Image (cartoon, rainbow, N blue to C red):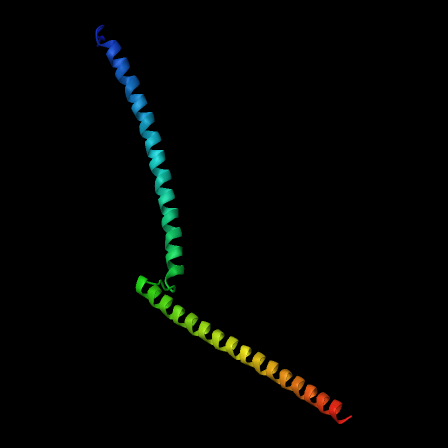
Length: 118
């Protein structure tokens, strides 16, 4: 069979295109293979993380809101207790000051009496 002069160049170009397509297909298949391996590794990692998280509990918004309200109430109680303790401390200070003042008055009265008796 003899080759057609007009189509011989076309057949060479078709063959060259077929080879390029084949090379591109091999590259695509390699990339797909790498993606499949990466997906398998990622899935394995996610499975391990999920197993680790099965025992964990996650809080909902309502749980967080409830915990915040409870915390605020406890904080308010602590602030009231602190204020009461500070008030008691101030009362102790006043009581001590009155005691010192009375002692000073007694000493001064005794001094006046002693001075008058002489």
